[in-house]
Length: 347
Ligand SMILES: Nc1nc2c(ncn2[C@@H]2O[C@H](COP(=O)(O)OP(=O)(O)OP(=O)(O)O)[C@@H](O)[C@H]2O)c(=O)[nH]1
Image 1 (cartoon, rainbow, N blue to C red):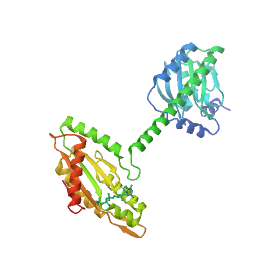
Image 2: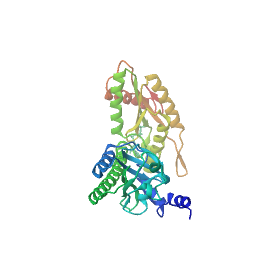
Image 3: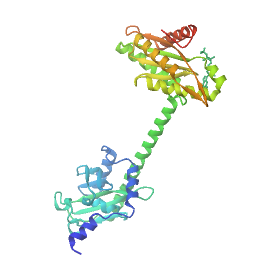
Image 4: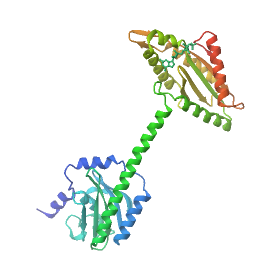
């Protein structure tokens, strides 16, 4: 077989079922992440302990080798067929080439032929707990040579440290996302998809502080579904829940992203409107009242009609008091709307 053809075939050598190996690497979500001191330190340590100028934490993706860390080398990626590390994921735990220029697999590669004219390569595979070789911790020198036994053992241990760090980072990511989900659960109201009372009040305190600081107006709407007891009694509690879920969705879709809609309790909902004066809040309240009255709810074959009464509380930009008095204002207005005959807004 002519040499060029042989090189070509070996240049793209891949382990069997490489796609599963690549999938295992990609599950770590580490590719293209910013440089990290912990990995750089392990690469530096590998170079120092092996007495060579170059080291890298290299991850072997489908078509490229990407460096998570490098010592003496620039970060970035190289085509897989141009990288020595592609050889380190072919099944062996360790791969050592004493003279890269004398090995047919590496003699033609850019780092051998051009600067820094690499000659020695020694890499240990980074093996995931499920047995996939996702990359390598390697050391290199521009002089030919080989590691001694102790250096090989050290490199293998450091390789395991790199893999442990990759695992740790992945576990931390999972933990962070579970934490965010838990926070979401703790702050959200499951039935309506709105903020729950605790979250609503926290955000209200924050908005009061912000309105005071920047002297901006702040309003709140207190929304109470009319004769909701009648809905529960007439159609069943499940139908009542369905109505609340529909109302929650309508509120979410009707207010601005910066507005805070929450379930204040039972069938009472509240919307905090940052940077909104009384007049604007009144307009939104009237729009919501009309939309709520027009919203269709069905319980089996029956249509459930529901209206809402809304009270508006507002501070103008020079008169920001506290969260409690804003809610009290809105609640008193809500009472007036109920006393005035329901399905109305009072301010
Ligand atoms: N289905 C359902 N009902 C709820 C929920 N929370 C509160 N309710 C019901 O809402 C009803 C509120 O009743 P009331 O306080 O008498 O008020 P209302 O019937 O809406 O009458 P007005 O507010 O005066 O128009 C009660 O029957 C509560 O059980 C809930 O999560 N799901």
